Amino acid sequence: MAATLDRLRKECQDFFRKIYVGEDRVLVFGEGAPSAQWMLIGEAPGEQEALQGRPFVGKAGKQLDAFLDALKLDRGALYITNAVKFRPTRISAAGRTVNRAPTQEEIGLWQPWLRREIDAVKPRLIVTLGNTALRAATGDALLIGDAHGRIIEDHDPPVFALYHPAAVIYRRALQDTYQQDLATLRDVMGEMIR
Ligand code: URA
Image (cartoon, rainbow, N blue to C red; front, side, top):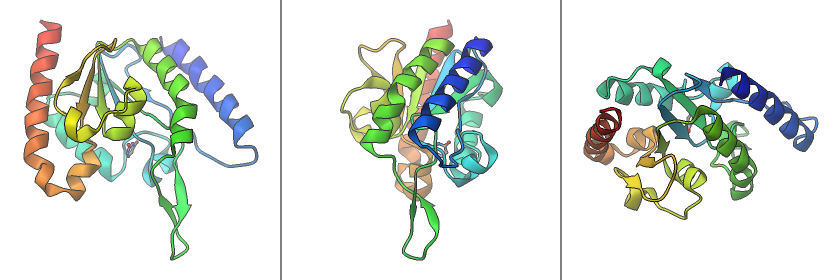
C-alpha cells in the first residue's frame, strides 16, 4: 500500500507540474498509516503546511490534534489528506500572500486523485472536515451545517461529516456541537471495530 501511495504521489506531482508550468508549488500529499482504518480529509494546505510539506501542521492542525486526543486517536493510526493538495493563495490588499478557498475548478481537478488515494488506503471510514472535503469525497452538493455529525448514506467507504477544525477556532459557538459530533464519531468507530 505504501508503494501504491508513493507511486500515486509521483504521478500526481508529474500531472500537476504539466498544468502549473513554471510555478513553484509545493505538493502537500496525504500522510499516515498507508492502510489506516480511518481517513481524514481536509480542504487544502495553508502556509505552514506548504512550508513543511505536511497536512494539518499549522493552527488548524493544533485544533485537530486536540480533537484527536478527545477521540484517543493517534495521528500515526490515521491517514490524513486534503481535497486540494496545493496551497491556494491570493495577494491581499496589503500585498501579502494569504490563503483563499479552493475554486470549483481546483477541487474538480483534484477529485480523481483523491478517489485514487481513497482506493489505495481502503479505509473503513472517511471523516471529512468541512464543506470542501465533504463535497469532494461524496460528490454530493451537501452543506456541512446539515450533514455534520452523521454518516452520509450510500457511500463506500462510508463518510462521516465533521466541521472543519478551523471553523471551531473562528466560531466558538460551534464548540458544543463539535464535542457532540466527536462523541457520535467515537461511537460510530467503536461499532465498526466491534
Ligand atoms: N486546513 C486544511 O484543510 N488542511 C490543512 O492541511 C491545513 C489546514
